[in-house]
Length: 477
Image (spheres, rainbow, N blue to C red):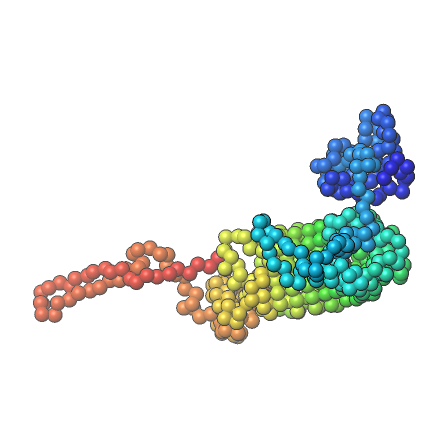
């Protein structure tokens, strides 16, 4: 860049000494002569001010120290897609020595690399490339129209994360030349998305996986662009400050995996807006602040019509503290796997093993918990322990071994919705099972032994106390 910069640079993404920023201003900043660029850093700690100098506001930043003025010759505006591909994958022409592979050394030791050069040569044939990784390669634009399609038409997977792309339109200019594109990662590009739905020319006809983590996209923008993803199966939207404000209508209907981690989805009503995506099998909700959920269309022991295909749910690093949350998950008709760690409920005083047992007992169809398979023996043990642990509470609430008298109150059934079905499965707990064990005191562990001498009529019976064998206490919360 030279001193003939125009307003066209405003909004451009740039790199300065390895740090990324967005150009917010181009012009003179008196009293210092010459042209300056005002940039807002992705990392506000890199900046010096809020876009003002000596009382004059030249541009605005979201953070009070997010801005700086830099000279144009210090700024890298990036390269086009094909240049980055060439830089990464194309071998420079050079002399070959009798067709022998060049030696490779690690430290001071030579390493034999059989076939290594042939792999590199194969990768350097751009027309055969199917997977391209250009992370952090300062890609800023598509380049001349048609050049990508001509040079590497068979690309199916592209990683463009942490580059200098500044708009969704520029992404479309690249993708429109890659008709076989199936996987696209655009994470950590601060993208400007269109205010109206893109034209059909921007459609991704084969795209199955789209990663938009930390791109600044909103939910409204997701729905606006989604018609261009007609066969999309996996959508990653982590860390975008997204709030779900609208139900998808005729879009995202093919999505099987949706990652909304690290977005503020505290309100369960936001989740209900995506509850009827027909093919959604995996939902990742880590670090969204959720603490409760309730499916109003399903009573105790019934299944909800929401999330009809959901098989795997991730709710790690949230504010879940009540067992009622777990109770509600049993209403999901297809749920088979759950990940629920680093929540107040799982970090409490019951201990990880007891917590795991109770979750298994409360969600009857669960096959995997926290990435560990639930074997039939573990399920049986968990359900029997759960049945015993709350047996006295069940009896006090109106439970009885006689089916005609078994009428636990609504409060107990709400807290333990599967308890009745466990009694049907294993039988109601017997009184002997529910006796409270005496505390582990020495006097409670002694046996009284009476000694009588049959040949000595006048001899008194002697009593001795002996310590019983080792006993184990079973504790339940």
